[in-house]
Amino acid sequence: MGIPLLDLKQQYLSIQAELLPQLEEICASQQFILGPKVEAIEEQIAAYCQCKFGCGVSSGSDALQIALMAEKIGPGDEVITTAYTFFATAGAVCRYGATPVFVDIDPVTFNIDVTKIEEKITPRTKAIIPVHLYGQCADMKAIMDIAKRHGLFVIEDACQAIGAECNGLRAGSMGDYGCLSFFPSKNLGCFGDGGMVVCQDAAKAERLKILRNHGMAPQYHHHLIGSNFRLDALQAVVLLAKLPKLDDWTVARQKNAADYAAMFADVEGVTVPRAASYATRHVFNQYIIRIGSGLRDKVWSGLKERGIGCAVYYPIPLHLQECFKELGYKEGDFPESEKAANETLAIPIFPELTMDQKEQVVKAIKELVTK
Ligand SMILES: *Cc1c(COP(=O)(O)O)cnc(C)c1O
Image 1 (cartoon, rainbow, N blue to C red):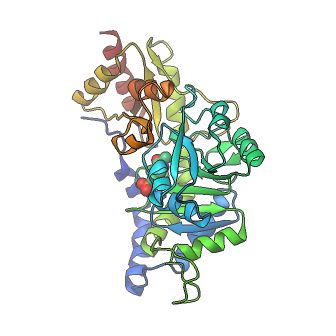
Image 2: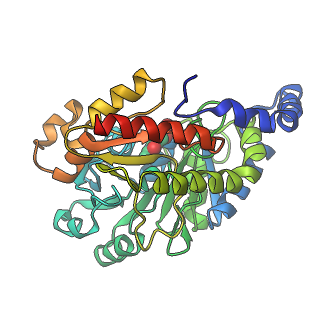
Image 3: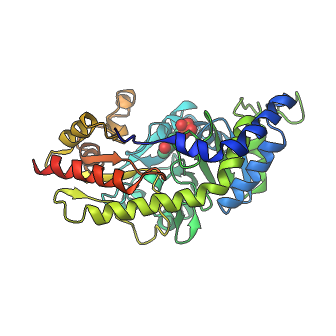
């Protein structure tokens, strides 16, 4: 009887009855591309994120991409971001020829260390992409202050953080653009790939919508070069069914986190997530524990042997990735990112996790760190 890292089947069963007829309706209409369901979810998710506009796109990676395209960030431009995130954050920067410039993380939150951003700003810097990693906001007030002082765009990578808050403000609402992913494992996941860019500015929203459809407006007239970054109606219907339940799921994740924190209190060698004072709503897309003394890999393999789902997000920081070799970084450049890569472990946090399952997870980890 294993425990999965993520069990999406239970969530599906809770929306199945209501969702299937709506999927059937789309199938009957055979209208799959954009349309009223996509417009409805754009409006609802924008509002959920305290934003005025939403532009549904094909993935979180494409959300980042299209935000960069909208500001014409390309060859010769630099974009500052964290060394410790999912690859897509930096991959999007490179895709059209701009250069990612990495900054180390704060060891408590795993988010970009805001005290190390300014030293990386050059005349070529165009934007900062903070990532709200694991569902906890980066220090957006500090980041927006820096961006204002230097005239930089801010693109929030909120792919793991829909509904998270920084000083009461929602992830995605504070920068120029907020990028969301609906990859199935995110807190709001669709049945495949999907994403959205949210923003507060009508002109920016208009440009995003044109770019996601080949830069076409009106039909077959192209003033901009875009591509196909569209969200489809089937995914929109799934998201419309799930969004009303997202807050309950978030509360369940937060409850799981609180239970774990209490259960790990007397386990030496395990550090549980700590909230930054400004991170007023952590949505726990992942629950990340830190295991010191070189024991992480032992716990990682030990849990796997016991059938308990766990994962390392992420085992190699971006500055040490093979594909970024020519950027010239080396081991030791970002000690906190490298330490996180060696010490962190994600354990099950999904909303339907039971108390018994949590106890089993903690018991196994306790044995593995003390044995
Ligand atoms: C998931 C994720 C993305 C990419 O989203 P996709 O929808 O998988 O393309 C980007 N950044 C971060 C931090 C993510 O977690």
